[in-house]
Image 1 (cartoon, helix red, strand yellow):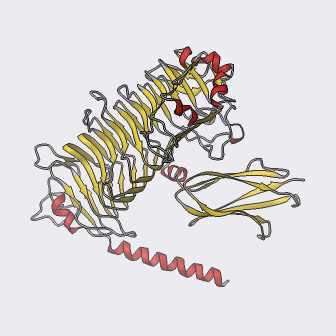
Image 2 (tube, helix red, strand yellow):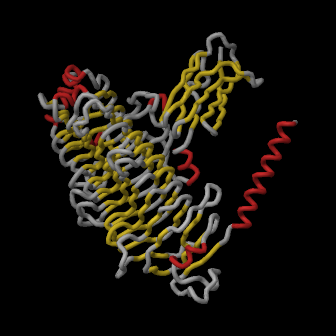
Image 3 (tube, one colour):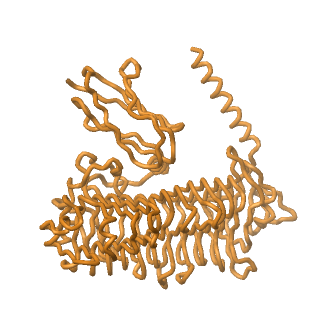
Length: 554
């Protein structure tokens, strides 16, 4: 009873604090037809310019941009707080455009304060960068459109805990230095703990080799996740370097001058992702970095229709590492899996993949021998490499995919495809496929799509947030006789505690109690010595807690 009373008091206090902030928060309005001299910032008498209005906006306030074109630069003036962000937003789906045409400034928006949100407007026609974040934290960019600029969104300095969600960056500069998103810290700076989801970066015409979709700088970048992001028509789609970088449900296509995915340095995971119609679908540039723990991991990806190579491994040295499981490499015009030196092969670990190529004699290419589809099928590649013992080949891609039209393929698996039920059940195997449909973890398919998983009818913001946060899956098998597996996902670095309880709430055992990094994990529950009954397993990771039921039968 005392415990419940204390909870009630805490809830009441939290509500009072929130209500107090609500009373203090204000809404202001700005419009190109307003007036800085006679307006007061109300909806009926708005100010005219953002530069004038923003000086009156404080933590918890919202500045609404009414419809129209704002030929001015926006520069942040103060911090919000963790409980009261400063928000600058379009109003009621009106189209507000911060336009640099004819202006004297090179950059559209400069943010060098923290706890800010930008929501729902357009930034266009700036000589350099549309939105520049400098040495700030806890900034959210939501539902923005950016076009006709050299760079879309730039992050420099030390920046952490940022979110970029549902932003579209398109038809920007297609030459050297052009990019949709770029995060490059200085030599002593760092950019970390970022989430980029539901974003697009593309150019419809005129892109060249050194133009990127999404780019992360070489050193000082860590713990960044790309989720459900798409890039096309650029030089390099995802040009990624850093530590603990995850690309989940991403797509890169039509990058005919470069690579769909160009991965540098260490600890990069690409999962549930697709690349097609690129010069090279995925390029691993290990950059000659000897013994630095360089690691790239590919899980349940589909690569199709490369002009040159599906996957090219370049400049591998001792310490480099490529892991590839449950992936499809199909439809390349030259080579499929390419190793540029003798060390590259020894750096490779992989299995349960599917190989196909339109040049069947060079599906795997090394600095020594090449391997054809038939040679891979006969085990010659496995004999040389010690890998891909359970991988398979297909001689006709039309038996694998729904539609193999090069520029717009349907890469869902065809009924009866060799990829169905032939994947390996890894500890970090994805719980959902490219379409955000649940996978059959007990018999996972190869590639980005799970056959017949579902027909997605749209994904809510809450669903997306759940996919990028801590998750506890139902144990498998369930019911079980003695041993069952429990899979879960951890977002960020947290102390993780996984325990088993009986129906009376008594603790039976602790399966795990240790610090884990961001990723997918699996724990085994051996119920030897326990009687058949209903039990519960509970996961705690930081502030996250979830509990599920399991059934032990004897």
